[in-house]
Length: 213
Image 1 (cartoon, rainbow, N blue to C red):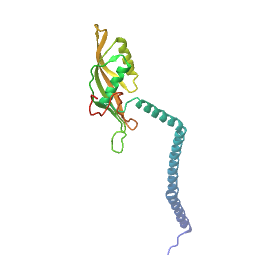
Image 2: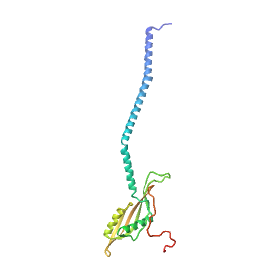
Image 3: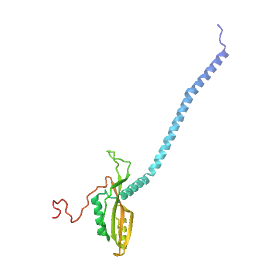
């Protein structure tokens, strides 16, 4: 049997060492290098997230105050709207007009509610938590020129949200009066903070069997 020379053994040993080194590089060094790169990427992502959280924390008070101010503005705005429109309430408003302004309202028609807004937020039954309505009230009126100006000012400053949709006026020279018709927009909101109560008419008995007593 032919013996392997010392030089051949050394060459084989060198090849074996190179093969082991190559395998170690491929399956060892490269594996852990990839793992280290993945860990570094995760670290940088976590570091960026922490930095974002720190910035948000620094702005917490600003955000909180902004949310509180927005909620106060919304509450104040909604507080200007009535809790519902009914014929009884319409009558009460017209009586209030006549009591507090120099205007007479001979005729009045009742309107119907038209939904103009519904919130996306819903209650447990799937109904909008906030709903807004508009009702157009047509009526006629008599007053003087100065009385009409006071009447318009009174409508603009009325506690519940309303505005004049349109009106027409003619002058009666024989009585020195303005006579006209007006369409008034009455607005209302229905939510947890708006609870409707029937108006009270002073001096009018309700529920009597004989209305002439």
